[in-house]
Image (cartoon, rainbow, N blue to C red; front, side, top):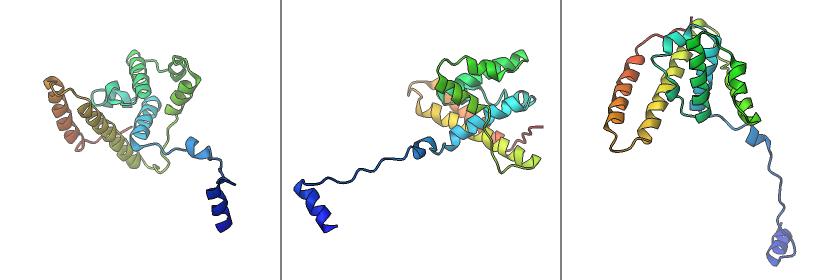
Length: 171
């Protein structure tokens, strides 16, 4: 070790450069907000009756990631018209990377939910997390002079508090 350090200091050798693993980049941990938004979009596709239950609570604007918001807008439009076609939504994105990400949106899963009450609890927590994140995001990006926006945030926070007491079921 001493010889190596001396050689490096003298300029006769250089430190070993180890290649970085690409696995870490591919397996980045998703944050809870993104996962919640993905999960909610997946459930909106899987459960036909869920849209009618949450359309007044969660809007496409509540999805803070740009691609998620765009997918939510398209999905909500399809739900209103009565025909849901995930392949059509995927095909509207030009880039292959975007298409892959949108396809992943429709296959999000949580593994620890087995029972109906567990699924309902996960749904409620997911809706609350998406709504809370939306309020936080809008608060952070609100113009200081936008009184109407501020009033809407206050109303949304009150609604969020009331939602915590509600029971929302997938079935």
